[in-house]
Length: 134
Image (cartoon, rainbow, N blue to C red; front, side, top):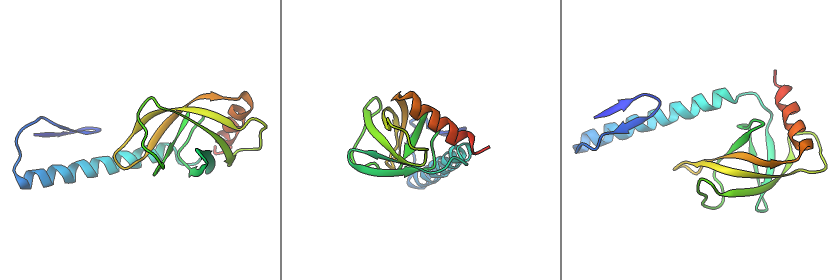
């Protein structure tokens, strides 16, 4: 009925109430494990603060390619472009603005985004902040 790998897949079989609860528990456990694994890959970079739509967000889950935010203030879909600016966490640069494409949005409101427009100076500052972790 359910298969556990990196995700749980449901084959469409009709489940009894107890089986539905078990499947829900398994899905939550796998999702939790998957999120912890993702966080472990990104452990280390300093917290960066960015402003998007006039609201500040901080995250430790970022790389020179993108970032993840929790509890974004408005609904987003994959493919949406969000514009923002770095507030702190990287050295000061003249052009702090960026554009990022939303890659994924999960049910708990976490947003994964990939930088699509970033000044060379901001890219170098991100790279340096990320390199300081080692």
